Image (cartoon, rainbow, N blue to C red; front, side, top):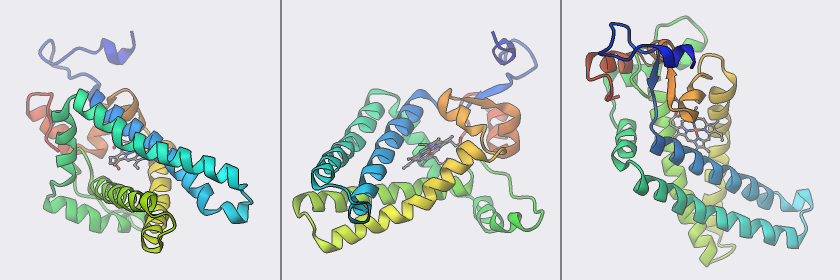
Length: 228
Ligand code: HEM
């Protein structure tokens, strides 16, 4: 048993456990099934866009298109099944956080770029900081635009406007995804968040540092259901 698991639970001792639950099973399975299909769509879509300069053979391009279309069906069906068969309440609770904005979130968003050039204390973030809320909303909008324009392209292959929208959304998504990967896998300060998306739990101290308002609410409330 790890030191963390051996830590006392609230109610049995004055010491709170050293880890806190960040994401439940439904949100994690949704995230990873969604991410898997998105990465597959991006890889096959990218190769299709660049098929001429890369010299992709027509039969390979046809195969890539089939995989691309299958991944788009997966993107719609599998995460939906995950949500409907899991805790819909937990899932929509997390989605609601994306749209719950406080004055501090707006200040966080304005001050965050400045924090790269000078030492500023950012307003305390809730469970998701304002950057994550923007990321979640933009990813959602891009997904809808990609699915709609992709659906039109399926019915009318080569149609110019939907193709332009489809490629535009893909191009906008690339830097967002690189930033997302950088935060999750490279940046030392935010890398511990990966554990939350894999195991569901993160270190309480890390969470207190990065999402202080969330931990305050968690400790002030029932210890289970922080709001932001
Ligand atoms: C494939 C590699 C990916 C990794 C390693 C990864 C990692 C993570 C992690 C660790 C979090 C939790 C952040 C936290 O607890 O504060 C997260 C959240 C999130 N991920 Fe991913 N992710 C990946 C792919 C994707 C993809 C492809 C999408 C969407 C197209 C996506 C959308 C999101 C969203 C909307 C959130 C919540 C808001 C945020 O934290 O920005 N992720 N991801």
